[in-house]
Amino acid sequence: MNLEKIIAVRTTKTIYKVGQKVVKVFDQDTKKDEVLNEALNQARVELTNIDIPKIESVTMIDNKWAIVSEFISGVTLSRLMKEKPENLSLYLNQFVDLQINMHQTKPPLLNELNSKMQRKIELTDLIATTRYALRLNLESMPKKNCLCHGDFNPSNIIISDNNLAYILDWSHASLGDPLADVANTYLIFLMDGLNELGIEYLEMYCEKTDTDRDLVKRWLPLVAASSLQKSNPANIAFLKSWINK
Image 1 (spheres, rainbow, N blue to C red):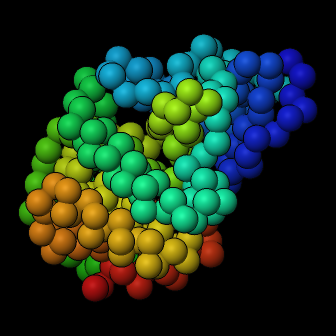
Image 2 (cartoon, one colour):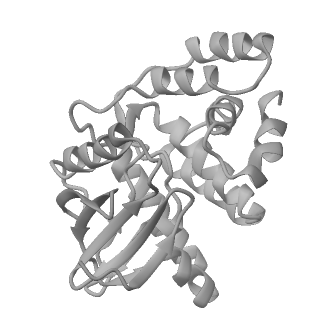
């Protein structure tokens, strides 16, 4: 397989376009169960009515695990937002509507979000009393069975050539409270320095779903803490600043 055209580079993976396929090649130290879990998540979401790239195979390339999916010709919503700021409100509406539609979906057999967050919090370097307080907080939060993406942001949305919106990267997908997913997206906007857009996003989601913003904010310390383990080191201080808010 000729891996020449790089589409994107992430912390633990490099993504290539090969013909009409996308090949996501993971770093050599990426564990097999993590790769297979991502592929399984994506395969299960394929069973819903959500538009996503279809998985074609899981393989090894130069002793590295790789996931091969169909290539979707188009442009990311993030790029459209930057290149056509006059349409920003339109794009943000589309983004929020996609997330609301996703949250109304219940694919089978995905991991349970609250349990997943608890495991991640226990693996952090936070002191024991902080982890204990977070655990108590998490136990009091709603346990729902809605599809949560876990990394829902405009760079993971492709607007195809025929104007369909495809959602990418299902490695963090789980079943849980949609407001945890909203809190995560809000923090992503802030980490990217898009504070005003993040505030507008949160207000728009809450208005469209008749949700009290304070219910989203209850999730912010928990989402921040559970994001610490695999976060970019540059974001650690930012995430920790939200844990005691």
